[in-house]
Amino acid sequence: MKTTLAFSAALAAAFLLRADYAPEKWNLEARDKFAAQRFGIFIHWGIYANYAQGEWYQHQIGMDSETYGRIKDGFFPSKFDAKEWVRIFKDAGAKYVTITSRHHDGFSLWPTKVDDGFNIAETPFKRDILGELSKACDEAGLQLNFYYSQMDWRRKDYPAGSASRKVLGNQKGDYASYKKFMISQIGELIDNYHPGNIWFDGEWDHARCEKGVWKRDLDWELDDIYDFIHSKKTLVASNNHQPIRAKEDIQLFERDLPGEGTSFSKDQPLVHDRPVEQCDVIQKNVWGYRINERSFRTPEEVCAMICRCAAKDSNLLMNIGPDGSGRLPARAVEVLSEVGKWMRENGEAIYATRGCGLVKNADGSETGKTKKGDVVYEITIPKGCKGYPTVKTSS
Image (cartoon, rainbow, N blue to C red; front, side, top):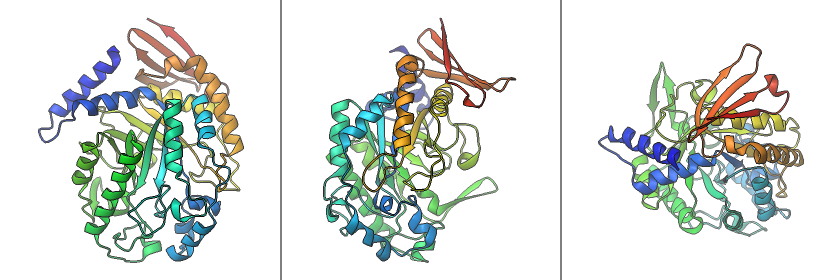
């Protein structure tokens, strides 16, 4: 594909300017594959789903890890069906899935051999959730990626930072030990399930921006971690809210259109030399399941977000939080079904395209353009998403 080769060439040229690092051929090809997918589903799920108050519940109420962890003994998601999840995602037009293998609470969704027993094998459920999801994704032709939290509200060797002190106090930890633990777990994830990328989150626990200058109070030694991941031919992404590093393969923007410079990305410039992904939520105010949150995006809104991202040369990673039984929220499933109908009719303007820009019109609508080869797609998004985007083609 001409556009894919051009993208690889652009990336290679950009990195030739950095004498200290240049991505290998497999890396560039994997980035191209990721960028072409354009739409993925994010899953925030763990034992916090049993509390039904979102993924930050432990932190919000300042619950100690011993008390919080007792819910592990009641985690039995009897309705979990990996094949059904993947069927819903594929029908929605998604090309990949990213799931929280381990969130900030430290609970692992796979039977890891390198923790203190705080993982799925130590619950009454026992089944390997990541293994079942990996198999279902493989069978359906979807790529699976893993979110992995760098921050930890449970382990004694994690050095507490600005966000984790509410749970851990001023725990000094032992980063050499914690780094060894992370690398061992990441090795398990890659060797056992072969994800497309490792999606990091939580570095900001030890980082702050003061007058435009980033200051860090922990050396994460990320080059070592990134080199290890790359040695296994897996991509690296980091939701760090900071300027991107050379060895990070995908630039992430949390709930913000790439390059807009608002919200979490106000100090995060767009670099234009590698794939980009915006993550956002379908249940408007939360990532993990919250039982009393009934505000969902409409299908028209989700389609508009996909189009805005594509016009900005970005993927969209749309999040859903399953409940403690393993069921996806019914309204989210309904929305995804309608999104899938639109994508089946208009996906040619989204998948494997290059973004050509997004503008706001005087009447409140928006116009985005994408391109594939010699074909240009003009996408009109109605004001306030009062209707689905429409697509016109020209060459």
